[in-house]
Image 1 (tube, rainbow, N blue to C red):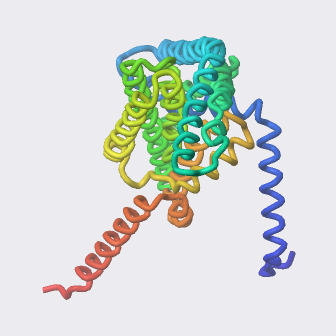
Image 2 (image 1 turned 180 degrees about the vertical axis):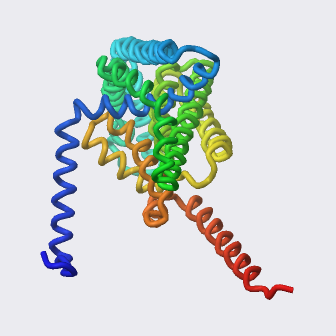
Length: 374
């Protein structure tokens, strides 16, 4: 192609669309390989500070990595065992919950028909409550929990990859120091982005953990069955902002209605609301700042896309992946506008305030620089 000649914009758009389709098809085809690698990468990012802490306490690197990997294996296999056992119990108890729900809906329909008859209305049958099949909804969540248990008890590929990643992470500061002498600001920016991603994932995991603990304690106090399972679900879905807490509350609320009645179910809803407001709107912004929010539409589309590409594992990884992309876009002035498109309203307002302050500082510095010397 001659120098200076530009491609047809339509051709560029078609080539871009074709490239995206090929990449997405490759992601789907390589799911069995890429999902364990992505899980290992996120675990390595979260565990690297722990390894660093142990090595600063004069623990040999090999022993530190071994301790951390064994701890991760115990946690994940325990998680899979707890979820697997609870699924078996929930499956056994499901017919009892279904029968109780049918009795409740039958009573509700009879009450509505009697009320309508007293007012001269001809309503022979009202099936509004029966259209909500609690058994079907609970079975859907059981299938999701089964997939999560399978991920938690995943193959040894995750753990072997995690070991090598942790060893590599210990050598990364030295490599970055060597590269900074050659590349300077670019490598420094990369190091800053890596620290920001590591900080986000570590803090989000910690906040999600305490969210799950509080939900488990509250449901245990109220006497809801399988409180530990719903707490684990709250922990996992807390990585999904805005809608994750709502999805996590649905099975616990349904079960509390069937098991305990409407009154206790209201307290379950109140407990979920208080915990998520406390952790999501008070503690999390204080720890992470206001600039890491994602648009609700972006969250929803990300869940759909990654769930379609990688199934349940993709849905769990979707928001961390999207947040990593957002952090990387924010680190580059040329792509910062794309990061704003992914942000929620609060983050956009914060970004506008920061931009205005930056303009004011630049104008002030230019004004001071133009003053005549005495």
